[in-house]
Image (tube, rainbow, N blue to C red):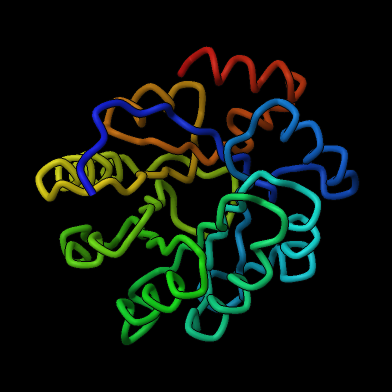
Length: 231
């Protein structure tokens, strides 16, 4: 695909930062405000030392909302879990779910991405702060989105790993050089201060969490309006 000439920056609220005791009401509001994706961090307690959201929640969200799901698999065995979440995440949305894998977690990431595409999902890769994006250049041709972890994966509330902005810049330049059209997503410390830097580096999708959209000092509507105004 040819490179896009202009891009609207999208907002993908991180549901692990939502009020889990009132999740339905929280998601209803986020969808009503115009969230572009619903971001779900799937953690297995192995790849990262944390456990979070699972298949039943993904299936219920997909059945209830037309907003596409943005599913980030932080798991040791994506070949086992990717097809499961591809099946769960389709639901009623006219747009397919985006499913991100960490390519270093599988022996054959190109095969895993091809299987995701065949299942109807948007195949995506996630790049850990310690990984060099050039190592995955060939995968960009079969990838619809690249998620750049701007903190170490596993927990909310961390500070930005500064060199990850160079990863975003490299991906934006590679997209232009290769004539591709994947989206670049950033996840981690997407704060009021960091948003301009991230977008300036080339980010197209912001995974908004505790440092912006779920800022406890303001309502969801106020925070969403502030974030959209910044963009």
